[in-house]
Image (cartoon, rainbow, N blue to C red; front, side):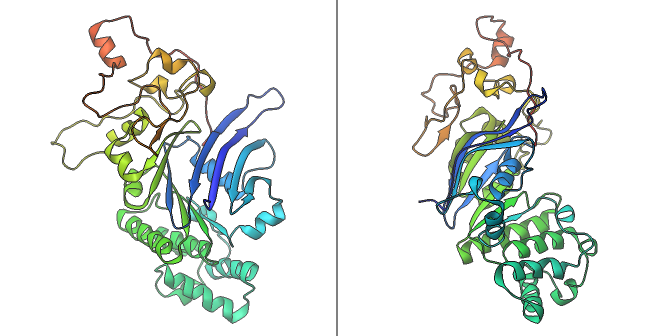
Length: 359
């Protein structure tokens, strides 16, 4: 059995007093095994961070409704009482937040913030807790840890603050670590050091890691399994190597195609995905990515597509017209080619009101 099994997770915001509901997470399912690194990938607004907050029980109690299951070692995290969830957070499940400056308490020294975790979950106090806190800071690569314990978050660099968050997250050797874009706003050198540190934690402790990121470079260097999210649903799920070798969903293909390449000739233009995350239709009406897709057909607008395995076992894609690299496959008719040829037989871009999905 997987350590974490998420099944049809939904998170709905709003509703009541005549306000329209919005599904930030719309039936997300994935598994994380012990010692495995699983990635959740997508643009801002696709539901990655909301998924992690739902698993940690950190969403607001008012105006938010969750559904589905999230079984962690046989326990459904979504139905746990707040007291039991507080006992589990930090001890069995820990999270590295995206912005360390806003996640750390600005008026409390780093040492107190680390030792309170040790006191809460490991019963350590006084000098024993201080020595263990210094050991944790040293373990994550913070120089002169005894001095850093007395400093405040604003006195540390961005990389050190992120390392302090990681030290707090691994203080109790959790079985599952959720990292919500831990390398955002860090320079490339610090990013590489943080990723190497996370990889060592997985290898040495057998910790399962759920990596949330929009950086495909991070995915290439760290993840074993990748789930690409769009508008609150998984649109492609496969192994890392298979995703980079054969991206099959047009959205995943667009994400990879928009990355600048060092081997491209000088002056080669980038190929971004047109539109924005707000240019979407409701999943109940068809594929949410259809308004931005160059490979849509009328079949894309006739109901929610299901995850299927058009290429190989274990490579699941939510698309009725996937991109196939097989030269024997029939050619794909795109919206751009229709416009160029003047044909009116194929559908034009769907003119459907967009639906905003919160980040």
